[in-house]
Length: 300
Image 1 (cartoon, helix red, strand yellow):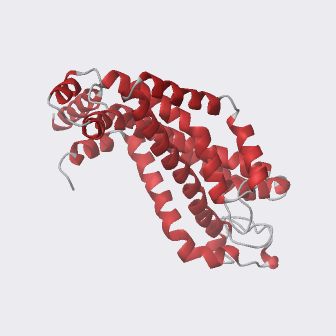
Image 2 (spheres, rainbow, N blue to C red; image 1 turned 90 degrees about the vertical axis):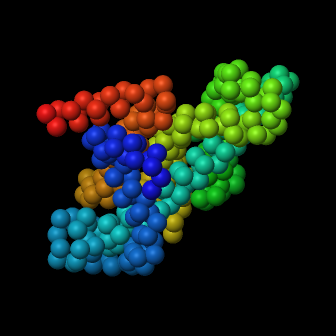
């Protein structure tokens, strides 16, 4: 492991909330990656004798420990498989929005005023539409699917990265090291990617972490409204929607996916707060000072 990563890991270890959040997110990501290959067939096997099977019982096997759904499919297996589509949509949306938004923001903040104005007006046009309403209209026209959902959600999130990146670049480009690079004859491409982007990147990573939780909640809302992912694909939001008619008779159908959405969103928010400080050289001393103080108390 690269040596610079060790201080960050040490600071993460000493922040118990952030460390626990990172472990939870790691487990969810691992489940999303390997879940469909291991449990995909089990998650789709129907057994009407196990309809709405109550949780916390091993009489039908470990896979029914969290209960069965309305078609007798094991909830535990479906939750793990649904994590794949949920993380795929949220991750794809955030990655696409960050790459496009940050790219336009770098160009708009570094190059001339006219180009910047055109890019900013584009962001204003996108922001003038309510994001959820825009997603509803586009998905109704194009049809609900994972690629279409990633496309429409990414479009609505681009202005956040664009405006943030442009504001950061306008400030960073006036710093001494950037001016020195210009005087030495460095190309615009080198200045942007070697001198400006590394300074802006920590802010973008922090925003992306928060935005991941927002996009996941937006996907759940769209699936709950019936215009998100459709069967046989499955997400946590769709599982909540499918369990809504059974809230009084089989609460676990909507409770478990809803709980996972809350846990994931909470973990992302807690981790983003730590990352905002840890990745900022001007504020990292707060974590380092806390680590030093705790180490002194332990040794004392």
